[in-house]
Image (tube, one colour):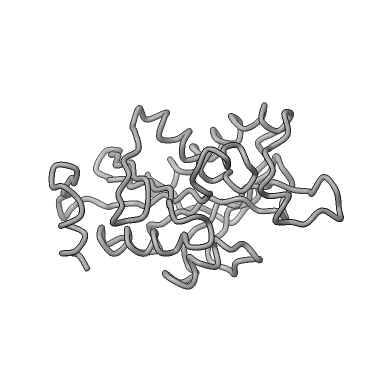
Length: 210
């Protein structure tokens, strides 16, 4: 599989790391395409976009990985940030491909995604666990197992209790919520930085809107 990826990706775009370096994988989940911008299901994309922008980095499409990729460094740590281009339900294909190519384990993988069961303004950190009905996480578990670290971004509660959940998550954030997305992204960037520098993330709930 490694040889296949090397054929697909020009050598000039690949930075090889020394044996002393550690590589971390940051995954933002969402759906590709302008029509999904600012939708609740794309909260993961929104946050990794903010992190990559803060680092003055940019995205490159890697078709072999089925993902947009940003390749960063912090000290002796290499950070691979991805946004799968597979659509949410097949996200695991992209994550598995990137992990295999860069030899990254679940211990060094952080996945950022929306969570309907958590209210907007809060996020929850945890390692492992089931999908809780989230199709993107279900795909990841099928492809790489479940022992990766999650940042679960609250997008609930539904504005209308009887609304279909699939319809709700594909709606854009309300104007009031959009005004708080920068705070959400900044809190996630802090968590990513902790993860990169080796801080052991504890299972906890954090509020980013006081």
